[in-house]
Image (tube, rainbow, N blue to C red):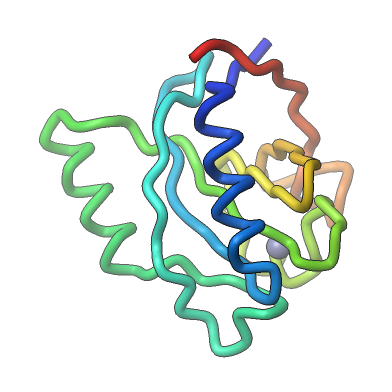
Length: 134
Ligand SMILES: [Zn+2]
């Protein structure tokens, strides 16, 4: 089962709680078994209170670093001020197959795999995970 660092999850929840009126977002790093690091990014969406767009400069910098042997980008996270940790139709419209999507809201967190098919919006499949130390 995929593991997420407990500290990472708590810190991302705290970032979301600090900005309850808008979606916060960032990048996730690790491998196929574990999400071990994250990097907050600016939400540059036009309506950040109900959608998100990761600052492309942060995304390209991470992809460049990965190519040069840096941490592997496995997906990204964002928050939903609504309280619902299900991907929205808007999320589905921009889902790139192959990435993990972590959605947090309040004390809740869910992980999704974006694909060319999926149970939700034809794009997302739920991924079970457990937290690990640290
Ligand atoms: Zn969303």
